[in-house]
Length: 369
Image (tube, rainbow, N blue to C red; front, side, top):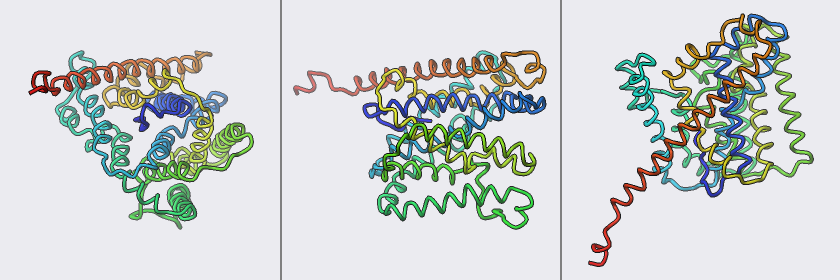
């Protein structure tokens, strides 16, 4: 979720997409951790259908972030990634230590010795699966960029085609009965429902391709993107209802569902077509990484979805005609609060950095000597 784009060159249409994707991620966490999917699925009927439509409309935000990173990093041939790695790692280390400290001081939860030890190693301990994988992609990015720069357009397309077949067709097919009796991936590769380094590198490369080999102008691009995105959503939901849940149903929910990858590209192309500059949008989008790390920290996740916003009771949906408004309010409140916290963290880092710079700066008398 880090921006991956220098502030002076930020495309506000894409920055707005970061905001939309982070709101989608919070909603997916409401659905998953908060129990919305479980409860609405039990009720079924109209409420179940609405829930699945919303879930599949919000299915691709994680991949969009990687595609954006690949798009803006593609033309960099520099191997000097130390500063970028530090910029990615510093907020991780801060939140991995600050959140347990706040939870312990306020008595909001139980912080164990293991939590403290893991806080010092946020990448290795997988405090946030996304951030660990993102850090690895940043580490590999210079090598990936050199490789893709040497490929022709045809070779690059062939590479993406091979990866798409492996990750989005072969892998899901190996999870479907009875196809899995013939096709398998055991001891070959496993993408863990689309949350693996394989998938993150694939989406990074897809973003790189869109930057290095821009698509030709498409008539009515925005309309085509919206219609394709909606059609993929509707088709996913139709398959979910038409086929057994325990069979293809679970595979449809994977991040590397081929229709989800198509949705990802459509969403990026749609927002990239909006060419405008807005400082407020850029500033809010810059907090995306912080929003993710705050609300998805294991300790905060437990507080949010088990203590404060437990929506796993079916009676809530039967008794509240405006439950969707309530869910939307939760998503917005969590987002705004996390943005405010991360903005304050960023300002604090800036002030500390300026203070250290002044301390390192020689005194005027020393400069004359």
